[in-house]
Length: 338
Image (cartoon, rainbow, N blue to C red; front, side, top):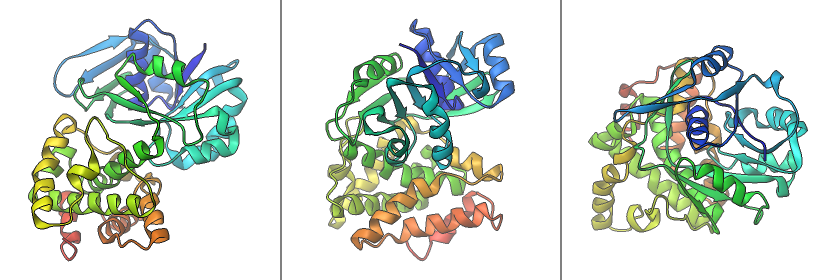
């Protein structure tokens, strides 16, 4: 079996380091030449936000250095470029191989349009990482909170067990029967926390602790749950937590309870900052349309109001246009809604 990670940025570097540390072979592929050179020279230096870390010897390549066919390609690029990237990757995918998309949102549909349903797997990743410098990345989730929800909206895939075996080198893998529900659970969390982190520059922990941002994120989580249920989708448990049971509310008591639970749910991911924030401050377009934007599309289809999600998307658009800077002051833009 030949495997590679295409889009070995922060998260891809961390995943690759864990896999090679377990004695497996996997190629790390990225367009960042300095990163490739540093990885090959000194290995992948992984730092834990909570302290500690490790170094792993890895093999890194530029896309133009790829050769032969891969049985498994972990796709970890921005979803915005899927059409172009998957079209490129299909020539490097073995006839019985699979692309496992580890992107946020619902990316499986754009992947299968090019390689087919039987060569597409999806994985909802419940941890985060930040790029520090060439050859170095920080794991911003607690090392004991590394989980993967693996599956496909199109049914069982022949590569499922082999993909699960590789991911098990890093954390706990659950092969989901209700994979669409697992995707939606992660989508709801990303829609709220990642989008709000991107436009405020705050970590998930600070969003949870600050009462104003916690009210905003609570409203966005509720909107996301309402949209999923209105579309006949039952969100699956994520890291053992049932979103609908604990964060959905229909009365003041349950609303107050969900407000208390939010910081507890994010405790092991408190250092996480959305990758979309780094895109915005670098003057790039981010993946908000493929995360919060997807929830907005399903909301429109079902006729569910999502005022906070709409406002967040408007703020992202203004940031992309250079009309405002991602910072904590942007919290006040939600004042009329929460």
